[in-house]
Each structure stands twice: as structure tokens, then as C-alpha cells.
Image 1 (spheres, rainbow, N blue to C red):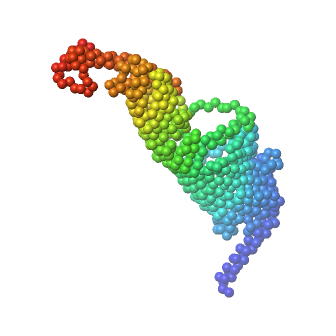
Image 2: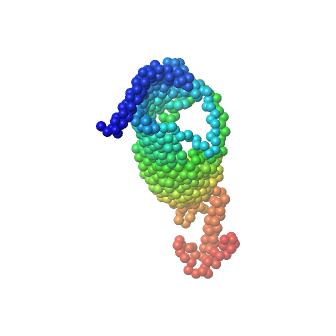
Image 3: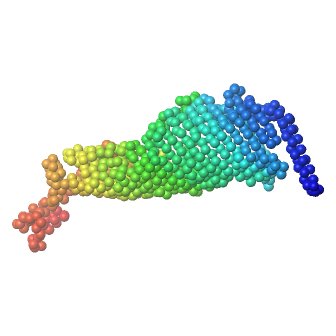
Length: 599
């Protein structure tokens, strides 16, 4: 045997002797009682709670195993934090080379119970290191590193948490009762300084939440590393299910969030009813005097992390709101530099389509926004009951419109003063049935037919500014051959609307039987033109005849009749309907009368 071989054997033998010696030392010196004596007293002093360890085993080759570990509540009996088994395994050979490689850290069924009493105090607030307050840390000197180098490089190949449980109970009712379970697997590499920390892992969880009668179930999965976190979360409430999915990049620095929400069915009526029965804090706990808070004049974006970016889309197959079914909802959004942009919103509503684009600047106080809204082939009888609490039988027709809008704020009167709307609208093949305006006009004129007013077309323009909507409308139909309206409607419903109606021959004949003056308002075609003024409100309109307009119409008609009669007397010939004057000289009498009457 050569000299080199003998040296190697000797070295190996020495290493074995050292390791065996260390193992014997660890086995006989680090006994269970001695280790407990080393761990439990300082732990209890730091926590201010009783600490219990069922058993502990430390081995040079086997690592550390702790069973039945728990931190008690203030009563010394109930568990605040517990775990069935804690296992730490490490590789010995890298340790001899100046690196700590932990092959496995396993927590078996760890459990933490978070409780809040009726006074709003959490059970963890009495932990000694929290109750004593944080000690003031010395500021690092300029030029020094915040994280000192570690003596050994640290690598943890796997940290595994099986069946972790989190229980939350709040006597005030502000926080829902929660029972959550999770599994976590993480691998990390620290290197020799915290700046080089890297990790990678995945998490799965399920949580049952009880908030009064609201009992949603939430489950999800996540994969993550030091630069990115991906997630998919399912929220189930009754028979409704929504999935939230996406990723967060640079979450520790400048977050870049992708959030997509998808759902087959979203019953907003049901959700609102559920939220209405959520208990208030005062119902479950002691009443506390609410703090008086001053309305902040800071822009909404001030609460967002600096540089935050977010994007995503919302897809819902079918949405129900106030009985209105909305299909194929799609919204794409983007948030960057404090500006929220809804790039594309579309939905199928009342057999038609609604689409919109909007932009909101969160950098300015009061929330500044603006956008466009398009309505295509929407049946208003299906839309109005949900939006304006109007019966679907009162207004019908197919609507087309385009509006642009801008404004600030979300509450009255800021919204009233800042909202501006500009656009066009059109209704086709519709009817007004017993609405307050047509009912009031029908009563004024004694024409029951006007209570239910059908039309072939109704179109116009709209301009909203300073709480008033300026309207210009034109309408054509059967009973009302033509109509014009130009005036204002306040956002509070107040009316100031001149209206001109051109009645059909049938309605004109009926009106002439009721009011003799109507004959002076009737054209040669037998159609009567009426000028009205609408005042009052949309729900309580007050229509009146435009006396100045009607007087002018009557004078004009009398003038025309007088001219015709005097012309007949001077020429000795009665002009037949549609007959043209054969000789301009025969109109001399007509010209004389026009001169006398100033027409």
C-alpha cells in the first residue's frame, strides 16, 4: 500500500472518528430535557405566553424533530399557535465546506387561532414583544449596507407546510368568521447576504367564510418566486362562481398586476340582497363611538403604490340586475401613471348592444373622468325598468344613440355641476303609453287618443350641463303627424319645454267639435297645429296652451280668410281648390287687402 493511500485512509478515519464523536456528544449532551431547558424559558420570556413541547429529538445526522409544539393563550390552557410535528433535515457535507444546506423543513398541521373580543382587541396584541412596543432602531450610517454578510451560505431545498389551519373569530362582527386550510412548498437560497435571496414555491388553499347569512367558499392556487406571483382563485357563493386569475410582477418593488375575472352567471340582485343582511359591527359587539373623519382632498391615486400598473379583463356570460338580463359582458381595463382606462366595454342588453369607452384621472382631486357611450338596437321597454324604475309598458321602441360625457366626483351636488353630456338619440316604431306627460296633454285637449301615442320615429339631440338637459326633438306618427320640442329638463325632473303638435285629420276633426277656435288652427289639409308649454316635472307635468303662439296662428288664419273673401268680392270669381290665377291682374284686389292688413 502506497504512502498516499495510507494518508487518505488516515484522514477518512479521523473524519469518521470526529463525526462519531460529535454524534455521541449530541446524543448524550443535547438530551430532550436539556434542549427543552434551552428553548422554552427564553421563548416564554419573548412571547409572554406559556410554551409547550411534547418531545424533541436532535441528531447530528437525523436533524431536529419537534412534536406537539404549542404557544398558549393568556389563560395558559388554550392553544394560540400549535403544530403536530416540526422536522428539520440538513446535509452535513456542505456544512464542512462553509455552507448550510437544509434538505427539508416540514410543518405538519400547524394551526393558528386569531381572536378578537368585543372591545376590538386581538389575542396576539398581548404577546410580549408586541405589547412592549418596537425598539427604536439605529439608522444605518451613510455608505453602510443595510444587510450584513452572513457567515455561511444558506440554502433550504424545501420548506413544506401540510394542512396548515387559520381560524379567525371576531366578536365585533367586523371581520367574518374564517376557517382556512393551506399547503405550502417553498425552496430558498440566501447565499451569503440577504440581497441575493431567491426563492420559489407554490401554495394551495381553501377557506370557508361566514359573515351573517353570507357563506362564501374561496379556494385557489399560487406559484411564486422573488420576481413574480401567479394566482387563480375561485369564489363560490350559493350557485354563483367567479374566478380571479392573473399574475403580479415586481410585487416587492413596483407592482405590475394582471387581474382577470370570469364568471358564467353573476346575479347582482342576489348579491345585493346577501350584502344587505351582513351584520353591522354594533349588532355583534359593543357600540363604539365612531371616529369623526375629515373628507380628504387628496386625489384617489394618492393611496396607490407609486408606479403601480394594472390591467385585465372582466368576462361574464350572463348578468342579472333588477330583473334585467345582460349577456356577454366584456370589459378591458388598464391603470398606468394614475390613469384608469376602460378600453373596451360591451354587453348585450334588451336584444341590442351597449358599448362604451372611458378614462378616469386618479391623480386629480374629485376623480376626473370622460368617455363615450353607444346604444345600438336596444329595446327601451326592456331597459328602462332597471335603470329608471319605469314600467316596460309605458315606453317602447328601438333605440340608437351616441353620447360623449365628462365629469368629476360621484356625489351630488358635485356631480350635478360637473357632469356634461353631448349626443344624439333616436327611437323607432315605439309608443308612449299612459306616461304622465301624454296623460296630462290628453286631459288638457280632451283627446283620449293622446294617452297612448305611437310614433314611427323620434330623434333629437341632448346637451347636459350645470344640472340641466337641453333637448331638441322631432317626432312623426299616425295620430300626431309631427311634433317638435325644444327646451330643458332638469336632472331633478323639472320641465321647461315648449312643444308643437301637428294632429292628424281625424284628431283635428274631433278637436274642432270640442273647441271652435281649433278651426282657425287647421290647415287646408285638415291638420291642426297646437303650440303648448310643458312645466312642472316629469312625474307631475303641467301643460298649457302657448297663448301667444295660438293667438298669432288665429290672426294669421283670419288674415288669410279675409284676403280670400275680399279677393273673391273684387274679382267676382271664387277660387277653386288647387286652381292657379290665370291673370296676375286679377290679383289686384288681393294685393290691396294685403296692403291694408299689412301682410
